Image (cartoon, rainbow over all chains, first blue to last red; front, side, top):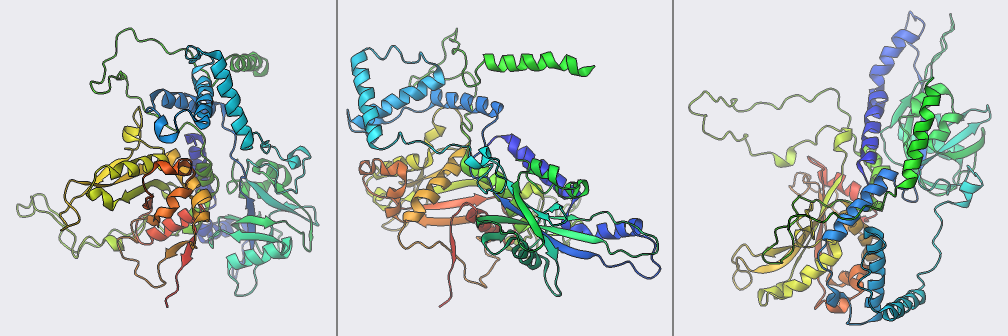
Length: 292
Length: 308
């Protein structure tokens, strides 16, 4: 892969750290409670903590290289082909075998792809012999079933725009988003029980909202991000601020079956999530999600 | 005002990209002066230092940057409050003005504490990453006849995609290297005689090798459940535990499972076993565990051995 992806990952990480370093919540909450909350004479109200899971389906196929990458790769391939050591034919093939003929035919194709269509045209003096060699090679390849159709890079669910399919957008990272009965899109989340650890709560809440019929894995015990919705200050009334910790998870198999309080779900890319969730929520989670 | 001006530019750009192919290049310019030739091979020596780099996207590298890097960072992150305190000065500070200490070494008291160095603070820059893979093979029969090493060299060439001197052009790796004996061991080893070969892979070749190993070789090995993890409670201060290297061995029978050797296995005089080292950038206490976490992300299985 080229440096583009490296740079993208690094810069994403730095931004992620600068904005929402989850373990710095103690410092952040102290700072925010002193400014946002109405002045309380006794003590500041304890925040309501909940754990959310960003359930990710990793890319299934490699992404298509960009135009620059394609040009770079073909230039490097050309360099390498021009400079490579001589191929030891006698080591790999028996003299005059069909396999060697086939290799030569394929090698000529590869050379022409790199050096242009006229490369090696002077070597083909005996046209009939070259034609026979090509026919023999094609027959051998057919016997070995090499002309079977390859699976297309576009899945039927991409064509039918099925946002519930786990096979959609094979080149991209997609994330599970749930729609509550109040018509709010969010990641699966839930509250904490007494004496429960955050990552345990995240796992339990994921099962409660998405059902038992999927094989998932919570990556780390550390939260990967934190979100604090803005607190509405009503004079004379104490409202407990909310704090949501995000955990990263992977889905291995199975599918979501919406539980209680959930009306719908979707597997979406980062760009698609932006259109679904509220502005504040988006600002809180956008740096956790992968750009591609 | 800006919008109408921008349109022709876009048109021109699309026209340009359509007209020229990105993967085709012009004809090679013929050199006006004759290039100097290598005396031995009689091949022309290029006037520039040509370095060959990655020439195709790599699936496993994509996997690392898409998924594994984030996961490994989340798994190995250790939170620290503020900067670390400076190390305690046990011995007097080195004073260059002092004539006694001026030309003397100032080693730390009680050794280098190699096994007790803490890992560097977690940051996006030092997320565990695979730096290189090294394979090496020793062949006992080479003691009596040097030509036995040739088979090993060919096998390592086929496995790694590397040749001597990187195979034309400069390369980031040294290619297949012959290992020679260093010590005199009675009736077994003499200094200077070739006894095996090794190869270091980086970048594209390294990721391709993992792909072959994981998809073709390990699933076909008999009675292989995974690499053995150390017994629970074993020391974490050993030099191997803090070096960030995961090592494994393959028996001679496994060589035939590599598809690049399977095609002409009869061309090799015998089957060779090999040691494989996955070398990562992990440092400090627990470095080997972090390296294992990374390597297991490439689907290399690990198994916990239970003390009998």
